[in-house]
Image (cartoon, rainbow, N blue to C red):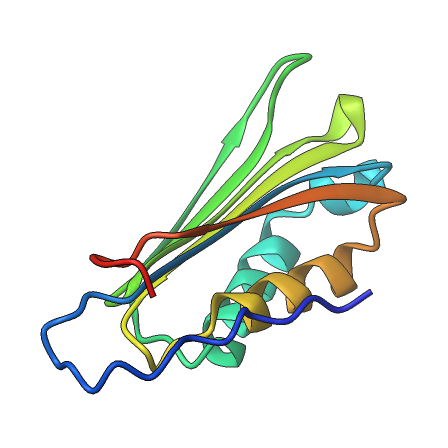
Length: 133
């Protein structure tokens, strides 16, 4: 399933902050993939490109223990993409937040979900714009 971004109304105003936030819980993932830090870094970098966002910095961490996993965060000029994994639980969370009308968080989200192939997921969308559109 590919989700699409809700259509933004034409306002004719240039003083509006356009913020779009897509976030999800991903279930039934391959634990080996969830431990593959280099693969997850590449995946998030590809998502930055797909979203038409501008990378400022990419960071990742490997956290040990039963509740450990990998965290990858791309700081983009438009905001961020964050992926956190819990391989023991075959679970991950994904957070894509963009500001401005050029970057598309749905494209980043769909790219990552398509690559990780969760058995199921729950996705939410929040309009973070400065005025109701």
